[in-house]
Image (cartoon, rainbow, N blue to C red):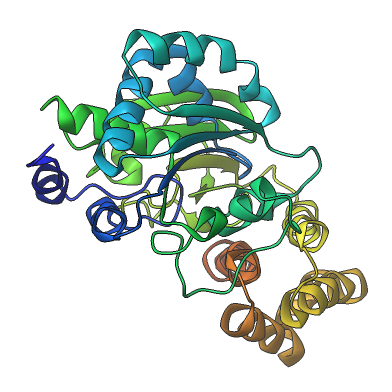
Length: 352
C-alpha cells in the first residue's frame, strides 16, 4: 500500500464516471484526513444514456472489481463500504457479496439501491451522499468536498465502478492505460470495448470495425450531455464516461433529436436552482415556438450561457452542450452544404 499512490500518480489514472478527476488527488485527500471514521462509496448509478460499461464490468470482471474495492477500503481504512447501484445492477449484490468474502474484504458492506425515477442528478456524487443519508435528492454546495466532509460529515472516497476496476489493475501492475468504450448506433447494436485511452474517436471506430460506410456524426461522452461532432472532427480522444453514439446524417430527424436532449434535462432537473429549473423549461418552450430557428434567437444563446455559468450542479452546466455543439458542428454545416449543392445544380443547368 505504501507505493500505491505513486503507482496511481505515475499512470495518470482519472475517474471514469465522467468528470475525469485525477484519482491520485482524491485518494490522497481522503488518506490525509485525520478522522478515524471514513467511508467508501462505489458509484454504480450509471444514469447517463448510452453508457453501460459498469454492467459489463460486473458481469465479466466481478473478481477484479471486488479486488479493487478491497484495495480502496484497506487504503483508507473504511468503516463501511456502500455500493450505490441502479436497478439493473442491484441484482448482482449477492454475487458481489460472495466474492467480497473470498477476497477477504474487511468492513461492513451495504448495497444501496438507486431510487427508481430519481433522475439524472441521482448519479452525482454529493447527491448520492444525500440519498444514502435519507435527505433530498439534490446536489450539495461544495466546498466542503466529499473527500473531506462526505457521508455523515466524514471523509468519503467515491469512485465509479470502472475507476475501482482500474485501481485493481494498477495495484497488480497490470494497468495498460486502457479504458472501456460504449459504442452505439442510434441506440442500437450496443457494444463495450476495452482499448487504449489514447485512441482518437476515428481509431476507436476503425479498430472495433464500427466505422460507418454512410455519412454520419457522433456524440461522445454520453447521449445526453455529450459533445456532438461531425465526421471531420474525429481526431480527438473520447472524453467523459467513454461512449460514442453514431447517427446517420441523412436519416436522423433534427427536431426529434433536439427535443430529446432538451426534454431530458428539463425532466431531470431537481428544481433546486433557478438557472436550471427555469432555463431548461424555457429552452423547451422556445423550441416548441421556434423549433430549429431558435438557434438564431439571442434569448436562446443567453439562456445557454446562463445555464452553463450559473447552474448549481453539473446537470445545468451540461444541458446546453449537446444542442449547441449539434448546431455548430452538424446542423449549420449541413445547411451550408445543401445551399452550395443547390447553387452547384443551378450552375450546371446554366452551362447546359
